[in-house]
Length: 633
Image (cartoon, rainbow, N blue to C red; front, side, top):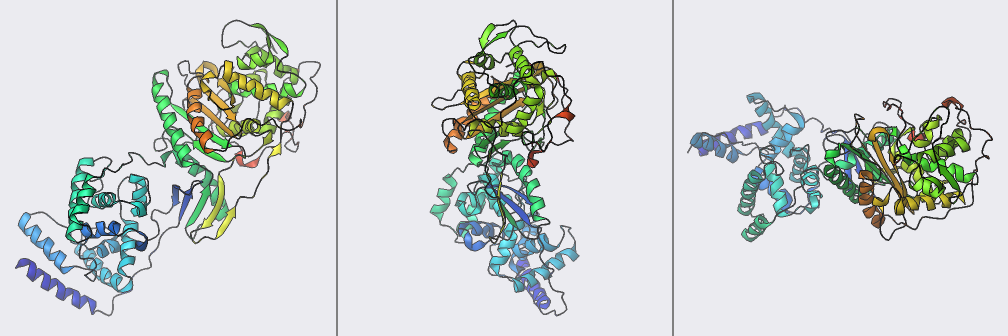
């Protein structure tokens, strides 16, 4: 009797509200535009801009998806006019009988609250909510209201709206949700922190069963479909599948904003990233660092480029949520012996040969006496052996012979953009560089000698399809040629076959690379490539404290092999190209050791050999690591 009386009374009140003529119109529905970032295969990798997506298009969803929400949240949604008297009466009866408060807001009322009102619990706010719900029903269709509702509700884990929730929990679009998955998402809404399938799997399962029962009661599914759904065990992603890609999205977002100005509509950005390769790279980094945690490994950066410079994988750190600082672009660290290929290429361009005999013996240059990673000296060896074994004395003497400013100019020519110091220790990698520019420079060796600029942005278009920006085709600039290029690549193959990089060997592929380790094991690198694919790995600590005997040939080489083992199956690779005839040869060696030259006297940016590309200019705000002489590894 209480419920019947309440229903009749509420119905009369609603009828009176519907006859009111002086109710102001509904406010305009406003939403900050979103920028959606896609990988090269069209998968969503990130969203920037507004919190809420566009209203969900109900017509594009399987019928069981909206039905799950209607069944549990407002089963009379298609029957009432915005406020449900029967639902309110049912809640009153439950409150009286059980002493438990039960919500009675319809989906329309919840939509009104999310769009126009606050969550304050006052009679005035509830009255306004009821009135505006009636107005909304007279203004929009049921499908439009449900689409608005599903685009605004919060599902926990930072996911607002159905599409974001489907991607967060199941790594799929809302249009591909199964009956069980749709019911799991509908179950969350009552209390996201309580029924979250990541943190509360048992409570989630219990409420999901209630949702499925409600779907049977409303005729959305059959009892047999409920039984089948209960037996299903969907994969729930503990962390966002696109988490590692957020470093890359941040990098690209910084390039997109100047091109579009203040966004007035939703935008879609197409990029070069390969999400599958990105996911594998992130898992490889996590697994390898965990295995070597006792050695003090804390952070890593990985970047993979194809032969054109397109970024295919981009890992700026171990965990974006904990540390969004991008170590691929913004961390400048000493390169160690990964720098030596630039020294050797400069020497080869002056006529040196991999078979030339040199002597590994103590050397002093301007009062500086470098030692080798391994104690002692090897005596007479070939240049090829000296690079494969990463002998410091030979690299120091070569740089002095060729002229350190010439080595700096060559490094800039092939892709380095940071300022290169020209003190004697520069031969051993005291210059501070980023993984991205190292990958850019090594790509010159991987693609047949063409300097490219690393890029990740392909196209910007509006949600309706209009193209706002499209990257034009850009040919690489010849930067290294033969015989020097092929000779250096021969030497870098030997690094992996019998030198310091044997852990990076990939059976069946033509690979080459170089290890790098800096003083006290503060930084460890492996930079390597096959034809048309380059990956650079850095491992270290943000506080620059030493690791425990982590060399470039150990942890970084393991990571490199794990990443490239997948990359060679997803990038059209070739044997390492031979390359063209020699380009931009260096002058003959000076008769005397080149004097120390301050950075200001490096070749002018107008000089073709030293011109730096704009996109990778170093960030002057990033703190530098104190230069010191790195060991060879």
